[in-house]
Image (spheres, rainbow, N blue to C red):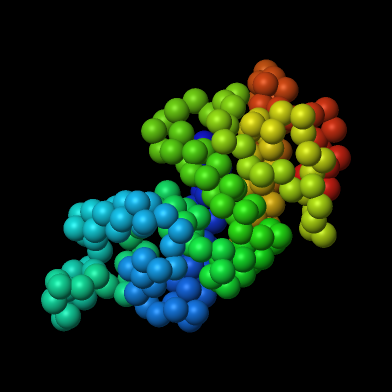
Length: 221
């Protein structure tokens, strides 16, 4: 299960990175991540820059080394290079700290079939929690998510009835599947997850928050 979910989150991470690079570089410039004026919280902004510098310093990527060889080390590489070496958590923090008047903030959210930035900010935080659990080989299958995704009550796309246990894995898995349906339409997560649970009937899926009618939910049909 950890491997299935981790693969899904990697695809979402790539989509987020791509959209942030593209839309924000067009709206602002290729060094928008250094522009303090487009971010809410200055402390978070400074923390993000520190994280960026750490990632740039330790990366083994050839294109980063070549950039410094060609252009010197006095300035950070542009977004289309720098963001390639950032973690999912750092990307999430950058996005969440963008001011709401930045047009790209809502535009990126809608690229994930979400109504606005408030949803994407919440969902990314939840996804990053799950990713960190997996990355540290933690127990996942019956874990509660401390920061549950913001409930999506109305959408024109296939989703689920909002469960009673919002911090359940079922709710978070459903949100991951919802986003994945948009950014990686040929994925096989749903089929693999259904088969995994079918092949392991000893697992009590109620402990993950799965309702009895979960297979009848539009998202999981």
